[in-house]
Length: 301
Image 1 (cartoon, rainbow, N blue to C red):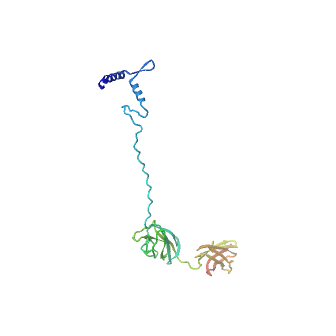
Image 2: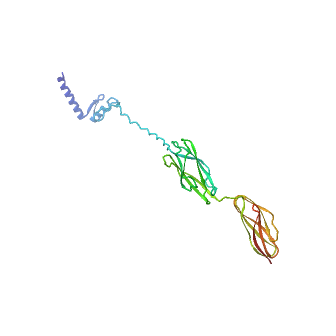
Image 3: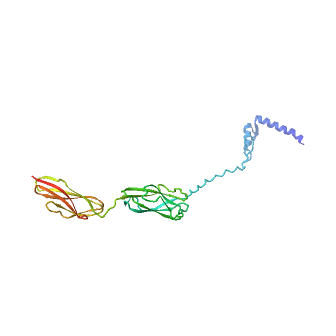
């Protein structure tokens, strides 16, 4: 049976080849139309079942084929918090503010209250150590008084002494752990003072008596303008009066000082005759002391 069908197959194949060479003729209802080979191929492709597209080589692409999964996007890892150091200190408070005036050769205590903000417990082998500047008689080092757990505070107290010469002094101390490693932040801990000469009881320390013009000439009467620069050692009130060579005195007056310093007090003393005169000042309080005199001369024309 197969052998009998072979001539028919060959005949059909030959006919197809002829049509391909010349085009394909179809009947459109009484009228034959010849379609070029390229158009015929395109129509054949269009007639393929939906979802079965063919490429130019005739390979059918399966649109339902499963695509490989897209690679997973890696999440950005959250950075770990920076761990706290083992030894870390924070200043909480202190006494003896910077610039405090302390009499020369005077003992005083300087203290710092510090907080343990690290992760290690401090022990009595930790110490505060003199680092630089003026030690003010302080120790080279001083150990902590006991254990200080994280979050707790300790008062570090040094016994110091103001130097014997007036001036400004500053000394630095650092913190060292039981491993003898300096764990001080920034510039460390310091004390800064003004060493001053001691001030005794309120007193007038000096008075300078003068006149605007010690010698004057003209039509009399004329007046001498007398002044006195009064210097005191501390705040207080001074009472005084002027006395003159003719035995007269001025009314008692006073001047108040808010701090140690110097103030000028004045008077006018009128004369009506040619001659030599003098004037001086009496400090009634606090000194009970005379200052002056200033010598004067008047010429009446």
